[in-house]
Amino acid sequence: MEYIQSLVGGVLIGIAVVGYLLTHGRVAGVSGMISQQLHYKMIFQHSSFWFLMGLMVVPFIYQYLQPLDIQLETSAIWLVISGVLVGFGTRLGSGCTSGHGVCGISRLSLRSIIATAVFMCAGFLTVFLLKHIFA
Image (cartoon, rainbow, N blue to C red; front, side, top):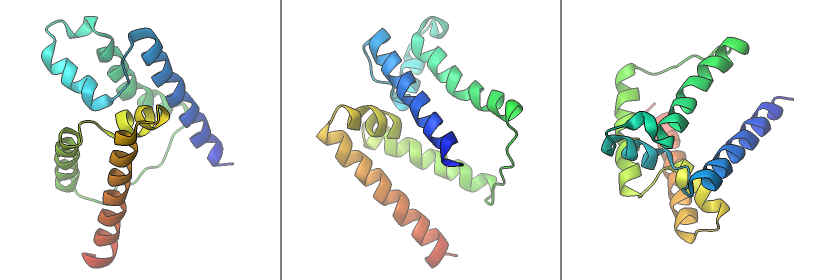
């Protein structure tokens, strides 16, 4: 029964990215949207601002409606380092997992398929190294 939440989440992500593409003619890549926000003077008037706000606010609403017990087993410094590395990777890979993995693969973009495979392999390798080699 736990898979139902994942299925519903995936469907909602699909609806959101298709809706954004149909209404704005752009893929819903989060790193690209953040980059747009850094270049606009009137950020509240740009659609990507509201899309990003939804991404940040909805988890808090969900947490209020369906409390989750999430425990982080790492220090804040590792979270900051991870965030910086992910930011660097999105610039290096010309996009993030939402742009390449959700939007690019659904459009059968070879570049996005390769980028997503690299993201996944890097993630698998990182988890293996941190859990088995550096533990």
